[in-house]
Every structure is written in structure tokens, then in C-alpha cells.
Image 1 (cartoon, rainbow, N blue to C red):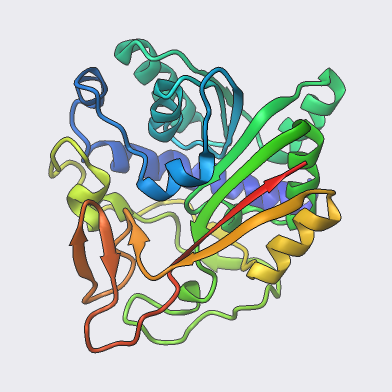
Image 2: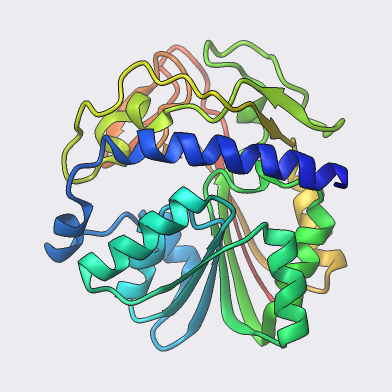
Length: 283
């Protein structure tokens, strides 16, 4: 196997284990959707724009909650993720909630190769929250997006800010901003359990306790310059680049202030920092 396959395969196993723990905290998610629930944040909707009637590809869709929330807005959604556990859950949730979406399990780079051969294209490509840190080649990612977008098609991206990701959970500088290869970690954590109701919209349940992932994982640090330059090299035009002083759905660091509605910010004793960023682009 090439290096990216080794790293991505390790991540697949790690995500399979973590996804079980994550969903154990979320209760009856089909009932949440039956009641009209959505897991999208205002920033997501703003960057996505009008999706009604559009063919939309959701990259690294995890267990499908955001994908189904977008589908509820009228998009024809295809979600792709490397995790077997996540895709199985997404397919079941789609069936149980009655919200139609298509879900496909694949390493994203392999999926792009197959999509090119099959000449599959979409009006909108969407990528949201904690995605590109799992990818070993940012140019391959950007070129794949450009290749599956129809002329005039839009790319909407929201991600945790790479500056924020230089800190450990105690707000101490720990990780390099600049990518020097894979960062070996103990495995995908139970961040849903740590974030509580922010990621369990219909009521948090205790679920799996003291989760320890048996599978290590590998992450990659991509700065904003890396991301924007890769998208431009791939032929996309950047329409918007916006930074946010809060983070959605992830209590990433100790002593974070709960702003309500699933948003967190640094404590009052710290300066305002960029914690997320968003990009809107088109082909």
C-alpha cells in the first residue's frame, strides 16, 4: 500500500470505533428528524446558499446527520465517507427518518477517481467540520472537488481554524501550524461525549463511558494558505473567505464558554481567536 492508503486505512478503523461511541450519546435520531430537527448551523446555511433542487455532494459526511439536514432543504444529496460504521448508520437513519439521500463508503481519493471515470458531476460540493485533517494530500482533494463540479457549480466549506488546532486541550501551543507529515494520535476521541448537548441536539444520553479507541489515527495540518492555494490551483474561484471567533458543536478546549445553541468560545480571560473558517468558491 502507498502511504496515504496506510494512513487512511488506520483512520477508517479508528472512525469505525469512535462512531459507535458518538451515536450512543444521541438518542433516537430518527425521531429528532421526524420532529423537524436539523443539525446545520447558521454559518453552514449561509455558505451553502440555495440548495433546493440541486445535486449536492457531501464529502466526509460521517454518520449522515448534516447530509439529511441538507436534503431536508430540498437538495438531492450524495454523502461519501471512509467509515463503514458511519455509512451504515447514515443509510439506516435515512430510511428511518424518511429523508432521502444516497450514501457511499469509500476512501475519498478512490471515490474521486471512480467519479471521474463515471463522469459523475454535481451542482454543489459541501464539506463540513473536521474533514481535511484526515486527508494526506490537499491538492488531490481540491482537484477532486473541481473535477466533480459542473461549470458554475459551487463549493461550500466550513472547517475548524488551523490556528486554533495548534493548541492542546489546555490552550497550550503543541502542534505545528505547518504540515510536516502525519501527526500520530491515539485515535479518534469521543468528542461528542465531551461536547454534550452541542452535538446531541435531541437530548444528551450517557451512552458509552470512558471510551478509549483501540485504533490509532493520523492527522495532517493544513493551513489556510494551503487550502486556498490548492483550490485556486485546481481552477476554482474563491468568492468568500470568512473567519469566526467561536466554534460550532465541539467543546475543543478546557474552560470554553458555552454561548448557547451549540457554540463555544474561549474564556473571557483570553483574547478573541479565530476558531473556524469558511470558504465559498465556484468553478
